[in-house]
Length: 252
Ligand SMILES: NC(=O)c1ccc[n+]([C@@H]2O[C@H](COP(=O)([O-])OP(=O)(O)OC[C@H]3O[C@@H](n4cnc5c(N)ncnc54)[C@H](O)[C@@H]3O)[C@@H](O)[C@H]2O)c1
Image (cartoon, rainbow, N blue to C red; front, side, top):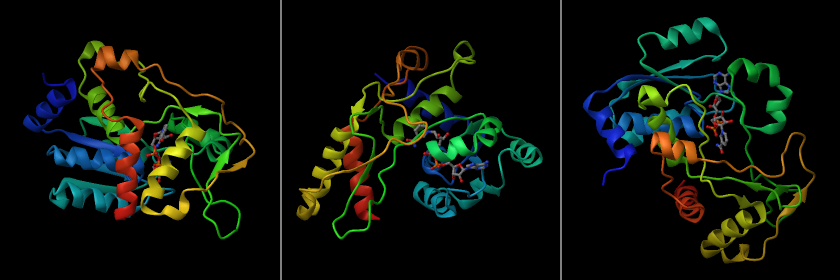
């Protein structure tokens, strides 16, 4: 049986639309851009390049195999009314991904973020204190949990929502895996995956730091409404998603 997502993709291929993706130089936005171009859509992308990179847009266009003229880039702040109006001209559907994906930065720039009408958080593995062994910084004691999911599922959810029947619109949908992961477990999976390629990483331990302002202990999404009303079905387990992610990092 075909999934709702496969049907939505077929429908888009048969009747291409014009889309605006804000934040397309970022992680989720550039993955959305690539999939939309693969589906034969025309896409306007708007990004202020504050944290995103133009290279992500170029790479998405190249990976899709679509002619470059099916993507138009506008460098602007999404909160700039005139730029936003210009970007929306002739557009059927807007996928709004522009935001500051960091708790501390988002807290500092809360007013600006509210103008963008998006809030979010992101757990990042960063560089640790200066020492020779590779380290991974974990905020808190590592027993916090987050609901991680693979980026293709974020793309799926956006496209399902954008093509949903009228009866499903106007609601808020949680999108995630529906299965929380403790950060220490996440660390173990990543370390073990990397150690298969780099055995010297087998004994690396996380470097714990203070919780950051605004961090919450547990974040776990109830995705039942998205399943029921959009036909959203996560396609990758955490382990599968991480395997693909590690492959990608190794190749790049
Ligand atoms: N990636 C995740 O794990 C995750 C988890 C939860 C929520 N989210 C939310 O999903 C959205 C996208 O996340 P992401 O991981 O792709 O983030 P990202 O930081 O990779 O991309 C955000 C993009 O928005 C752009 N941007 C920021 N402010 C802008 C502005 N004012 N005008 C125009 N462009 C602007 C940045 O340059 C960047 O390219 C965000 O709202 C984020 O909070 C992401």
